[in-house]
Length: 200
Image (cartoon, rainbow, N blue to C red; front, side, top):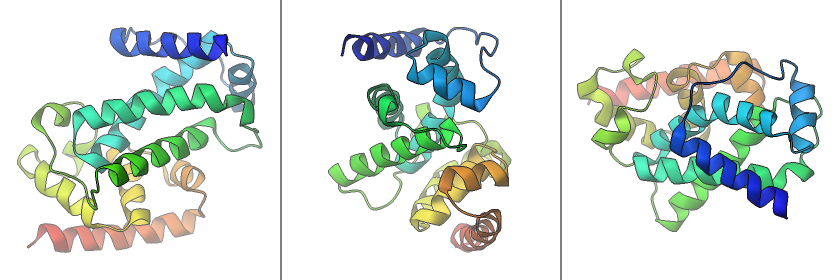
């Protein structure tokens, strides 16, 4: 479809020129979802500006590679453009739908490359990940990435969303489709395992 191709091109342009974010055009989630479905360029720009870095962070911590993270973030938004007609807003944040796309893109890439855990963080990509300094000093980032890679899927997602991206328990629960209690318990267990792995 022409509009999908055009939007994909626009997203690629935004990635190249990451301009200063514009004021939010859509404050309500239902309005944003409707505007995205209506192919509103301002809605897509808002989604990109608010979620691109988060998608990148998630992909980078999962893969440990800046180039892979860029590829996944780009593919996530392209797939979102292509699949927006199938998105049925029922109160769940648009970001949760986008996160599921990012998750599938990441899993597909790791399967293609036959990786079973996160690769060591490369030095260039580490500069782009916001939030890692809150849970590890610069000299520990490599060990942290390897430890996160050793967690099972659910715990890894919780750690990335809560500690790397700084999302709230409520946001994390919505993104993962779990209860807040399950997220809290998962975080406790994940941190306990991380402490054990990092103490070795």
